[in-house]
Amino acid sequence: MNPGRGLKESVEAATAPAVFFLTLLVLAWVMIALPGMVVYTVTSGKRAVATIEKCETRTPLRDTEYADCRGTWQFADGTRGSGHVSGVGKADIGRRVPVRVGPLGPYAGGLDRSRHTLYPAAFMWVTMLPVFGVFVYFLLRSWARGRWILARSGTGTPLTGLRKWRDRSGRTVLRFRTSSLPPAPLERETGDGAPRPVTRRPFVTARGASGETAFFLVRQAGGIGVFHATGRPAVTIERVTRSPLRLRLLTPDRKPLGAIGPHPACDDLPGVAYQVITATGEPVATIVPRFLRYTAVFSDAPSDHLRQAVMAFAFDAPRLTR
Image 1 (cartoon, one colour):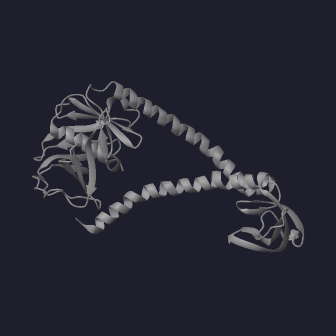
Image 2: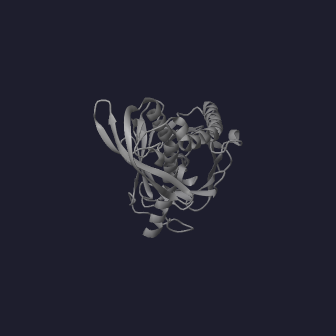
Image 3: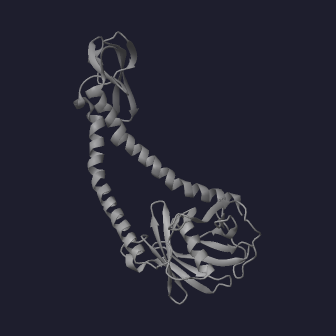
């Protein structure tokens, strides 16, 4: 395994979640925290009287200026403070100005003097609310479609989880654990030879309810290699298309075993559910993504290889869809 490639894969995998959460933090600050603190200070901040001592013009950005005014303030109980005072200008130097003190310090004036803070937040709320409404609509529609598909799936016991899989009664039937080393030496596959793993922890061991190794996975570029507990290859899962996600299942000698693709009942909502079929086109399992986990229902008694392929896909689907 190439260490540089593994590091690159790890960085690429972490970039999207990091950017997403950073964007959420920025939006939360601009749309909720900052306007909330300004409104709280103006309406409920502790009253004080400030004496403005000096004001300097700052230019943090090109064509952007603001007055950095400093002074001291005194509360009704006699306690004092000093530092930056918002909402005043050079004309207030030497004057005693009523202020309210909040989380961001003393502030003079009302909400009309906070337009530079409140207007962008209001604009973002007006812009984001329709977008959020559309997102929630499609999300609820997807959840409803997924529940509808599960209700009409096979009569087999549904399994739910991601790293830890449980049956309907809550009993753990399978646990996945990643590692940087395989639990057993890998035997060479026919055809393309030894698998080429990706990520820093490419090996995933699936352990049964009693802790024994049931099988293990090797995360590969564009697919997954499924191996017996002894290291003998069992199934190869290869990605055919990314959007919509379609995969083919192959035996160790590259013969077709089956396929995984969008469920026929959700062609208009890709990613809501997946169907696993045999090489002859017979459906054997339905997989429905749910919040932070997956549910797999087997419509018949498939072979161990197909069952392992279904569980391997359900575990590694978030990576395969990227």
